[in-house]
Image (cartoon, rainbow, N blue to C red):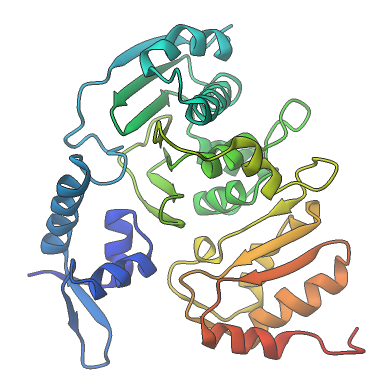
Length: 345
């Protein structure tokens, strides 16, 4: 039996530590306790429990099966040379296979996500071709676009001068980040990840998952090491309104002015204690009028982190409002202590 930490399980399954704790409390996963009270998991048994759970619940393997295990035959699969390709033409050619007539909210979301993600492959991948795959099931439409370029995370790493590949994920999650600002707003991946039910972006050995049904995000290891594979799914019966998604992050002038970084993406683990971690989280956020800092899954924050987040950085950027959200009682206590009082600079 190989016992591993909750962080190792999170990386293996592409789930967040908080969601793994919830599944443990619900009895799906079995945790062993160390002498110090820390959870340890049997890697093989936990992986099998998750696969079985997904097959029983949805008749499919875990997540979006980006790693190739147990995937069904696509309804449509086409390969396109990227030179001179027009994403709207490809969408018109293939959209009939998705059979979304009469499902207007889903049709609009899929059209937006499809064209945005294919355009990214055309303009940014640096590869010669992309493969588009579509799946149409009764309760789910899935789209996958896989190019053979440099990989989105490596592309951002080089283009923005970031320290590592994980920083590329972090910057994408904030929005307004692009290596070609003269031609792109940096909004496509951000809004696509918020509009669909389930979104995964895999490249350079990393996969970023955004699960809007569970309101969860996670980072994990990926077998995708050549090019970028983006995959998303939408329930044909969804009532999610694409305009409402945009309005969540826009001001009265319809400008993209709000961001919602998820703290957990900016560190491995559940404890944030340092001032440097807060600086990394807030880097570039002066581009927004309001930043909702989502503490979901975070158990501990330190005085230095809170002071930088709520006093030092806002004092230097008074045009941007910082709004903490989804805090545990412990985190809320530390945040309350760090809030500047009346008369504070």
